[in-house]
Image 1 (cartoon, rainbow, N blue to C red):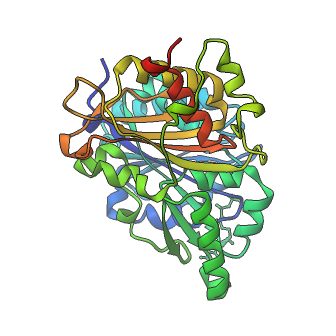
Image 2 (cartoon, rainbow, N blue to C red):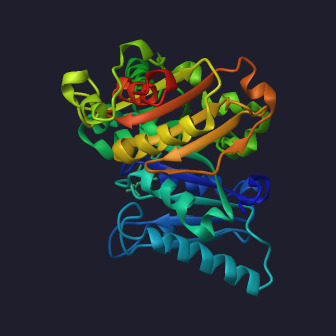
Length: 360
Ligand SMILES: Nc1nc2c(ncn2[C@@H]2O[C@H](COP(=O)(O)OP(=O)(O)OP(=O)(O)O)[C@@H](O)[C@H]2O)c(=O)[nH]1
């Protein structure tokens, strides 16, 4: 059985391109009372990790470093083992249990596989819950980095909060260009400016679904995204048409700018039959999972009073979490998709495919 998320330890993933200011921020954060008893995991890519020596170690928190490879590609198993070993060591020594975990990724890491690991690794998934992804963007080099490096775009797209660092180095016009650029990549994430890592830790914590509780709609932020509804009357659904539904002849399913981040909200007005929800998401994830960075949803399932919160990364979904009835007062299901190059039509066509009226 899955543990109640309220019993789990919140984990924050701190990401941002090379030199964006992650270590500077961490150095400040770990001095604050909220970070007491935090475990900080730093992944420095390369043979000799240096970052952990730059992070001031307080009495209460422990800093562990992983430098055998990049967290997002080669050492996902190590993430689990490292955290597990540190938890065990603290317990054996009779220390205070960790109250939160912060994972600083390398500047080149794609955060999606890290979230995937947090959700799929048995040990981690039974102890930790994602509190949020914080992405740092350098005000001076942000736009050019976002344009040149797909990792940087993915980091910004998947984030719950965007921190614009080094604002002291640029003028107001440049700052607002970066803010608009980021809003196109990730319309839902709140943007905050940070100078030399100075920010109250409370502004970066409590962003996850479980921490927000009844404020599930803040977590989803559906209104920030372009709305897409099902297109049922335009689909000729036959079993053989599945492949053609994803082919270019049937419309712009994959973006011409293949790798570009596309985020949108798919809405369904009527309660969704549980089997339709399951089959649709299964098919969607198996066909397009590689291109789906993150899915967040509040869903009204037919026959259930309580709406469900869903959270998925690439091929994997967290166990659905029941929400209070008022989290979906209008009965409309809303799915936020953050993708690289998936057109909203792909999502809506696959949904239509499972509608009973359309079935052959
Ligand atoms: N002017 C200015 N410099 C900053 C600010 N924040 C960080 N820096 C500087 O930017 C440089 C890079 O900062 P780091 O904190 O090492 O960046 P990082 O993201 O950890 O870098 P990597 O580990 O290489 O990915 C350092 O020289 C910092 O002192 C800021 O707000 N303003």
